[in-house]
Length: 444
Image (cartoon, rainbow, N blue to C red):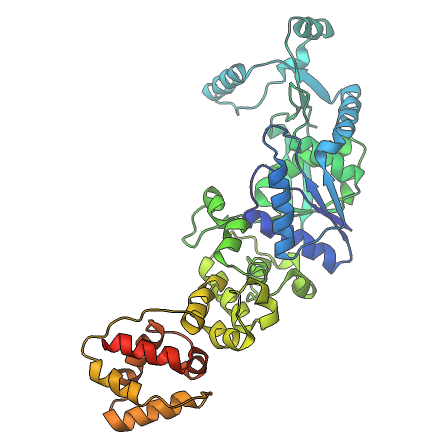
């Protein structure tokens, strides 16, 4: 078994790309197969090395590795050779129509009540006419002549699928400047690299029909290929996510503090009946089954992903996050605050609360209570029992309880109405900081 993920280095990876990459990787690893990273970079104008580097970095961040890395720009000679074979077989033919001419033809066919397919007029050109056109400075682009048949396959996700090739225009495989298109390069690579399984988005179903015909024309046996098409993603409201994917690139999610185990766990379960559980890809292999993905469109809900992110952080040991915490952070502080975090970047303010200097709000009407709290501060050293002893004494002395007792103290000590357990946090804040903040908040 051999699978591939073939992104174009023309931008950053988004969650739709990540879902496809993860599905390919998990299926390969689950069945002992190989996983290839294949950069579709034949569009030399739009492909950028910085995007290629970003793709690899983001995939590694997500927890994916690969057995082989291939750049299609290094294989241009293979595509040229394959094109010559198709030309010799009469399956790849030159065309000279401009975009304006093609648009006119499509509109004319629509007015006539016909589907806007390419009319294969270029096939009626004689060799002399082709030579004359080239001599006059016209450079042909090349179309693949589809077979007059219906191509079918059993999809691992969608079930039985078929594409009627006569209802599709002959696809362009080679541009006028000689550069090959994805439809062509993908098939040449899948055939020569002995790819056995192709997992990609449902928007490629028609491409699959075309590519199976092309695969056979290049001498391959389509029976050696297995396909799985993942239904497309929508947003929380059911709208098309594809138009907004730039806002949820992996780089964007990573910057916002999403943990790779949360994203991988969520994407692996997306579209199935299984409850998502956080885990890096290596932790998800044993339970992954591509056939459990539903035919229905999948809803990408950032709130569900954040639930997993909280679980990851709340259970994360200090060593797992040490290098991403503020300088000077220790295990005692991390264990005290981690249960209050949705995103790791939220840890910084709690570090300032415990180890730095904050100015708590002035609490109108609480001067006497906070002054009493200051006077009742226990001597050091403090431990996990200090909070209970201190608030118990204040309760007896002031008659306060519940929110009236605890909220003014929390606001004075942390500047926040909610947060980590103060029984754990108070010893980390220390007596000097606590006393200073009580005085400030009391207006003393």
